Length: 249
Image (cartoon, rainbow, N blue to C red; front, side, top):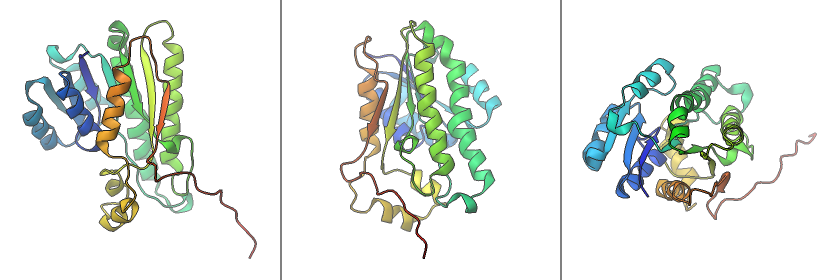
């Protein structure tokens, strides 16, 4: 099985690993991201079956322009992987920046629905598949997760809503919800704090981007009559923390 996959956020982490996994299996890959130089490097690595489209998914006009400018040989999209997303900050709500909240909403929600809405007619036509990258934060809250968790809860619920509204059209929709994964995600979230990165992942045997890429590939290559509605994935080292209790001193 092969086809054309459109992957957002391809310049690092899950997106880069997913592009390599599908390209290695003979798929055509459209990869998007803000960092044009990384997309160019990936194009050199993956060859003629890769098309890079550099734009900020939070910019609706730029997103639509890039989608409408896809070369003819990359327009027959069979699989959409909505991977682009980010988190800013780990502080509790009283100490957060409104600008950080808006940036997470613009990227994790608005950008995702813009791409999905534009590509949906083609995915319906080709009886395609949509894989949305949510998070365990969509279900399990934690201190400092606030708006990031809210955006990922939207992604999970939006996936279920798509699945319902696309009933009878043979379009598959999956929400993948990873736990602790080692990638640039934490460096972005902490403003490049390498110490925080090392503390979070040290000795944890966290999920790697290649693990999620393999999971996405497995979901996408199941028989056409199988839909994986949602899939929560955590490293063995991670489980649930006790509930918080505030006490009078």
